[in-house]
Image (cartoon, rainbow, N blue to C red; front, side, top):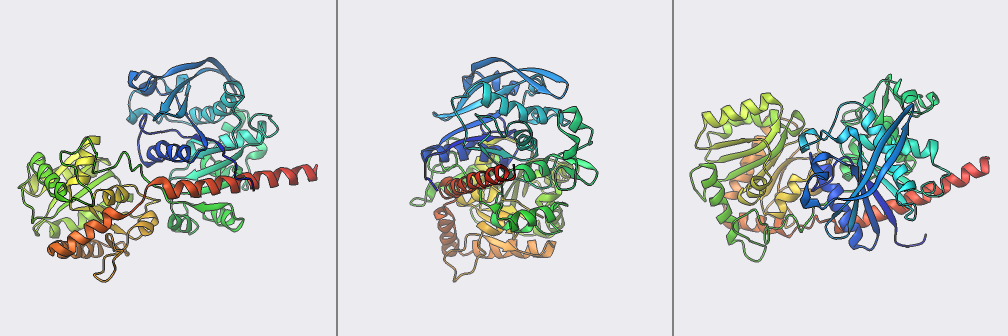
Length: 500
C-alpha cells in the first residue's frame, strides 16, 4: 500500500483545550498534533460551543456564514468558524442553535439525540461545501455523539466525489455510554426504517448511536489492548460483546493505547508548579510536596507518604473500595488529597472525611486545572483502583511526574503499570487484581513499605520518570490503523461494484 501522507479529519464532541469533560478531549487535542508532526494533514471538527466562539484567546475566525443542514423535515441554519490547535492544526467549529447555551464545560453535553444527529450530518456537509478542495482519506469519529456520521456517510454520501471515498473509523473511549433513543428518531432524522434491525442500529428495542458507529465504520478501535479484549466479554461488553467479538474476528477491531501530551505535562517546564524537576534532578519533587502540604493546610512532613486522587467521583473509579479501606488507612501515618466531582453521595463522604481527619485529609470538590498539576507533582502516590478503566490518563500523567500509581489490573491500567518487585527493573507502580477492599489495602501497604526505604523508592521514582507514554508510538499505530481502514473501505467498494 502507498505510504503517502494522509488527509485526516478527527471529529469529537470535546477537544482540549477548548472544551473538556474527560479524557476524550485530551486525545482529540493531542493526537492531531502528533499526526501533524509526522507530516499528515490533520484537521478537527467539533461543535461550535458558545464558550469557544466567544473566547477571544482562541482567535476564532468566520469561515462560512450560512450552512443549511437538512435533517429529516428540519432545515437548520448553521455556520462554520475556524480556530487552531497549536500553530498548525485547523479546528472547524460547527455552530448551530443546539450549542449556543454551552457556556462552560459542564454544559457542553445537551440532552437528546437531535444535536448529535445534526452534528454528524453537518460535518459531512461542511466537508462538501466549505472545504471541497480538501478531500479526507479518513474521517475519525469518537464516542457515541459522532455515531450517526458513518450512517449518514453510508446512506447519503458513499458516491459523493468529495467524501464518498473516505474511510470511516470509530473509536470507543468508554463503552458504558452508548446513546440509546426511541426508534422513531430514524424517520425523524431522514434515515430509512430498514436500518432498524439487529445487524444495524437496533439494540434491545432502542436505536443505539454507539452501535451505529461500530457497524457502519470500516474499522473500530478502543483505547487500550486490554480493554479491547475485555469488551468482548459479558462482564465488560455492555451488551455489545457479541458484536465486538464479531468485529475482532473480521479483523476490524483494534486496541491502541492512548498517550499524553508530553509538552503539556512536563515537570521540567510546568507553569502550574513552583519547583521544576526532571529525571536528572529530583530535588524539586520533594519541594513540590512541601508546597502542596502547606497549601492544603496539612502538616509538612517528608516522611509521611502523601496519596493523591484526581477523579470523576463515580463507582467506576473504585471509590467504594477507597471508602471501605479509609478507616484502616487513617490509622497509618499518611495523608490523602482528593480533587474531583460527581456523585453527590461521594462528594459528601469525602467532605465529611476531611472533617473527621483534618490533619490527614483534604477534599477539593470540583475541578481546578492548576491544583491538578500540583497534586500530580506533589504527591508521592496516585490512586486509581478502578472497577474498569478503558485507558486511563491519570496513571500516565502521574508517571510523567514521578508519582507512583497504585492501580487495579484492568484496561489501560494493566497495559501501563508493572507491579513492583525488587528484582524487576521495569516496575513502575503497585497493582492488585481482585476487586476487593483488602486487596487495595494490601497494595497501598506495599507501597508504603517501599516508600520507607528511600533508596528503593528513589529508584522507583526514576523508573516512573523514564517511562515514555507520549503520543509518538501511539500516533504511528493510528496511522497503520487508518491505512487498514482505507484498504477495508476500498475492498468493500470493489465488492459492492462487483455485486452491482
